[in-house]
Length: 259
Length: 323
Image 1 (cartoon, chains in turn purple, green):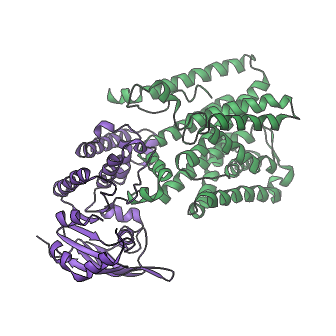
Image 2 (cartoon, rainbow over the protein chains, first blue to last red):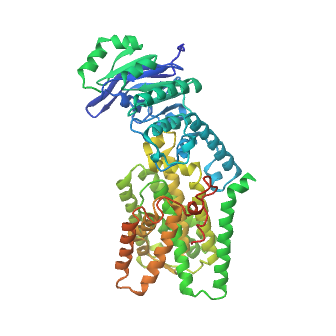
Image 3 (cartoon, rainbow over the protein chains, first blue to last red):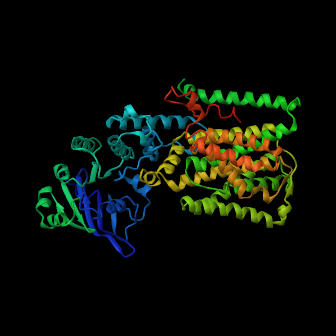
């Protein structure tokens, strides 16, 4: 099922903060439609890799390519517009905005009405806002959040906030979706539902997904391939079975504290 | 029809605003409103414009700027140069004031909006002081003794400028562009990750805010006969900041109401010059003690009587009636 050229590709990517090498020589390929897991003990550099892929940090070595285009040095908003969208490990919703407005913000890059048309309330403003509203409600429907669309995001229960984050990331209309521990803090039942949801949106939006997760069993269950990070290095790559029996992975996990 | 439904609240408030305009115009023309009240009214309107423009920068976009008097000064002097030195009509003066302040906003905004929080506050404070000191040392505009300016500000001018200020800021806020600004206030990293060009919107809010502060400066200059650099010190910036914070960060109606109320309070207190600042400060302390989120919190006036309707059109009702 893998296409010839990878959709997202990291070549020997690394970053150094002063004397500290947070990540080095990370090479990974994501093909169209894949669901890839990224695991590793605490502090291994998983979120750092996400931050490099989304432009929050600029890599000090290597390069990142999206469909043949180099992303190095682009600001995060441009990378998002090129098609990489993400969620955050510690939820970062726009708390004072309504659920609906949170999703609309992510759709902003695709809005066609200009600032002047909004200031002078030209017809294109109303058309544009109407279209955004309809799109946003579509996303909320998929995530069963339409009943709380006028609530402030900060007032939602935890599980719904997690779902809203994914809905918001999808509204940016990405090709690649990066999920940073989407199941963190969820109970087993919620996690199960979330995994079903992730499988569904992947089919529905023809997405390529890269997923950070601590819960090994969960990653093993749904991911086609898994990358394992430890101490800023990719130590293993392969199918869940390969990774599970890889002695390096076992060492990394048993050598560390419980994650 | 759908458009009418969406804009019903908007037209309602415009009609109310014009009724208010006509009544005041009639009161002034018939001489029933004495000059003291007219002065207070104009001063109130100028303060509302300043508060609304700073609200866009601090309340909506979350950029803590405390050099707003700098833009006010740029506007005042630019318009005075146009009308007094170059003998151009008042309309040109007002427009130049806005554009000059806008340019100042662009020049100061592009480098300093990279800074966050306290650092931005200090940079903008510095900008305000630079403007004041520069004006103090330019002989062309009179240095410390300032410029004398003919009285040209009339009620129709004040009203028109005020209405345009509030309309533009309300319309901007209630659109995808305003939401982009609010998302920056709420979480800049997330806004960036959602494809919002954060620098662009921070500068845009800054520039629009500066524009209207400049217009307010033009009205001020042509109302009080004389402008001096000392009128535009950092205390003026703090006055404007107080309107915004006291009204509730993020609420346009709050800023407007606070500007109106505090103008009334400080005008009233002019009769007690010895205790004026003490009482004024006490008022501020009490409001902050009992309403720590400001008079309106983040709510708008219109949401108070439109609370049943979940979907509003232009979120603007009533803002002009209080001014």
